[in-house]
Length: 155
Image (cartoon, rainbow, N blue to C red; front, top):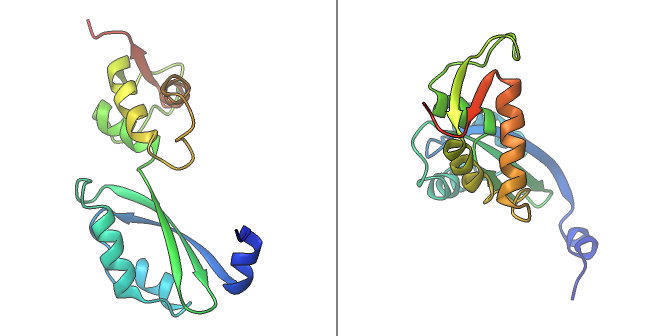
């Protein structure tokens, strides 16, 4: 079986591109067009594939995309679910976190909200081997830094 370095030797790396694109809304216009166009990658193939992979998300959900471009003008990409802060703001119904976390409470959420976000984040490649408990603890930490109080149940 070929090693990763042997595979990459056949496909020299050109660039790694990070973008945030709304779910189901990839178009050849900025920011996608200029980012991929400068490496002569097939814009329409990316847009079609990205939109197909993100159709299960609500429109305009910001999706993080990591595109690996190769010198033979081919590419691969991975789509990550939206950031934890985006989910927390949506669940709490706020535009932004507290400017003085620990002093001002921006909103409150329950452990059920945290657990639901953790279940979604567990599908990310970086979190797939983490337990729901450890992902939840990380999300609670993020909520605390945003000034969001996490309660067992809402009173």
